[in-house]
View 1 (cartoon, rainbow, N blue to C red):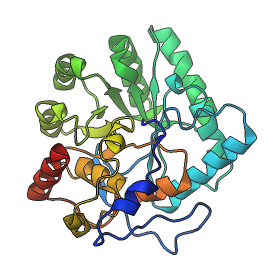
View 2 (view 1 turned 135 degrees about the horizontal axis):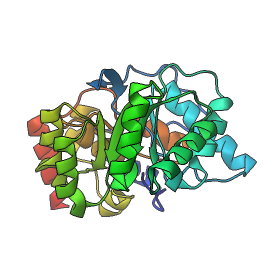
View 3 (view 1 turned 45 degrees about the vertical axis):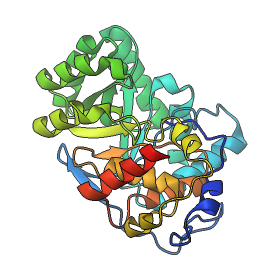
View 4 (view 1 turned 180 degrees about the vertical axis):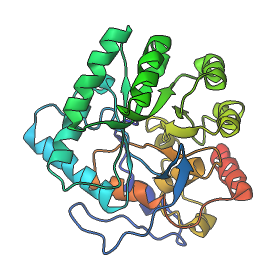
Length: 308
């Protein structure tokens, strides 16, 4: 759920250390063969650790050229072994554009469809979820989430019924505001959700105190939004080189550095960066492959970033 960056990520590659070679692929090129992505188990399913968000990036309306471009982005996602696509009615035409892209691609067995209900009242929630199902062109969603806790008690009643009846596979709840962590943790402790979604990145680490440990304790799947802090992390490292030791975990770009920090946390199931570009999608997906940071490396990464 990250804004497209004003700063081109390729500028970071140019300043990366000599020990970290770029892995970016020109738009339109096809990788010879994608490596097997790392997956984590959650709620009875295995998910690749890098998913795809759609906030802003897929809100392109009926523009044919832009819809075609987003279809290419989605194609690159699946070519790299992608699974989870996350959206919401809040994201303008994103759900409709995702549906258009899925219709114009071959069936994708790895697809894990995740969207949200974002309205008040049980009745309006039902109507909204049915519209989302139509827009995506799916018989059912893998995951339906309550967006930003809005009227969550009313929607949980519906989601519990839908899950029992097979209308959705799994249910979840989300937040993107740190000030709601106390209320969110109470819901996590007491309600029968399968997944939770919240913000976590190398700069915003509040979730390490309570939400991530609680999710592990409760056995919940964890989806991380804003892994690039809406692009703010790239602004922070503008003109700064990757450390030479980033090559030890196969990081050749700052995007991979940031994503590997997030998904290597033992409590995180997957992160959902968003992009408009095929080359950035491939760059993001590469972060779900190769060696992952251990606890010592994660501390080293965080300390290096904090000192910039």
